[in-house]
Image (cartoon, rainbow, N blue to C red; front, top):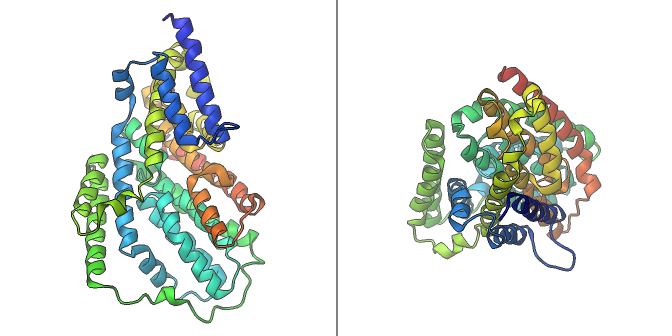
Length: 417
């Protein structure tokens, strides 16, 4: 196959795949984003743009294993009622709706920094709905705050969200160094997000003092088996986080933690059922499609000569990834930059990866479609009779995204130069 034919075939496959990701499907078909990524990878192989061995080698299995391991770890925490107990105790002394909002956003942000933000939203959304229903207060500000804080908090670490995990694998930045650079942005971002949400929803948060808390604050006595599961899950999770900070290989640590937890009397199929296998398949498919694009298109694009990336990498990457993250979702957007950043001057690459992680994550707050965490909160709320419209979310999401992105770019400019 000539280079010209391979070039145009790659453009067609790549463009069609990312168009489908942006649309969330194709008209007249029920295919989802996972199916689109898988079909794109099949097209790459079918058109012989990559050999099978090249396609296998293009998949970053360390990232996939890391995400799989963290999903299993968090599911054990959920089954052991960790989130219920933590939320109940944290909310026990809340006396104002504004304080409730602060506690919800703090819990969401901190947990999302240590665990995967999508799973944190999955666990905390029912609790927030339960609390606000019993207190007879508007749940919308608290649910929106939950989603926003999960995105902002997950900026802090490599295990906070899937796109950060990908960046960790591609950049080889250590867990500790990544946190040292981006955790300050997450901390300031959480404070700013709370203040903006508080101001914009002040009328809904002006309800009188809360006289009581619902039963979630006083969980029933735990069965001894569940208590043992909780203790084991907390020990394993704490050890894994400590090893992350110590610089141990994250994929191996996550896989080892999952393996230790699976050595239990809980039926494994109950755990496997909660794993987002579709997300893992989408990752694998996109790695193949993007690698074909790198081989047949980007290697001839002269990225190393793009002066704009040399003069203002933080601003350019932040703006570009923020826009793309809201067009095709943040994981596909991050993978778009996989063939670009390695061709930048070596002194700029770490800053570029950090800017990409920061902006693609914070951009998830712009609209409801910006991140999976947002969709989880909105969908679970809808099933409980609480409708969060696009306007409701964007009321806080747009200003928070713009302000936190500016904070992030300013901090990286100061911290890296």
